[in-house]
Image (cartoon, rainbow, N blue to C red; front, top):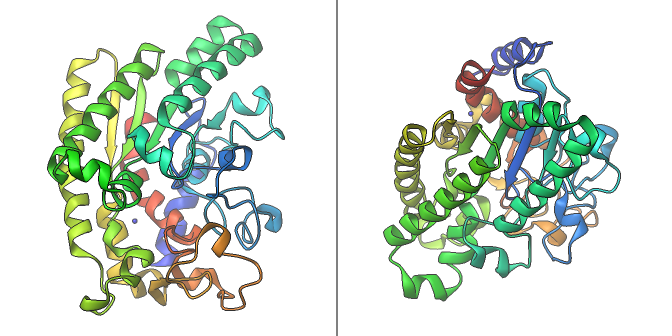
Length: 347
């Protein structure tokens, strides 16, 4: 997440070709990095179900994914020999027949901390788990108990959370900063992550990939406000990401020892993402400091609109699609890097 484009294309198509996977479904919890459209169904300002979002998706249609095309779970599903897109659970266009091989419960703007989801009135993590319980009941009704239990047990669960807890909550709203130092807040989030993993484990989940934080100080929105440092990456935020990731890796190691039958993988996008941002030319990118949409500095959600004439014409030249989210091309490169451990671990 170097590969030159021809190399990562070869790797992707090799991995993505008709794998007879042990994994029968990809099931997703998380935030906008993996949301495939659940926010379309709730009352929040954080949506992306309008153009130019989705302009490079199948049919050129916006789906609620915060990108110009597909997001990481879509590529991961395809690489495991499953469908090329993961539907949102709250999308009425899909049924349990679609969800049986993959489903997304993620909500853009959410985090481990319930206070994070309150900021933009999105789905909190506890509610994602409640929706998952509802899904389990529907799956048993559709497949029967034995087959459904097998899918639940053998499915790969992708968990991607944490960036919003820091950037949208801790460093923006004073409440948590008054309660915790940043190191204490990291530990608080890990406690919440432990409760979440324990709960879904009790529901039968056994295969989990949990993502680390990206170099969040390099998001265009953060760089745009870093005037005193010539709009470079905000080093403070990157250091927090590195510190949290180190703790998360230890957390994963400990839970693998504590919970019988659990296989949990720490999938860390930081290094590949940082390399893409700092050496974009290695991956065929031309612009890394600004996003494709609008001015590339602050636009996301409704501010990233079809009417903005400044939006780039070719998103493949850009690392970022909007001020907070990568382009489809970046998502694919990052996933190809993570697949080097995901496939051998879970295939």
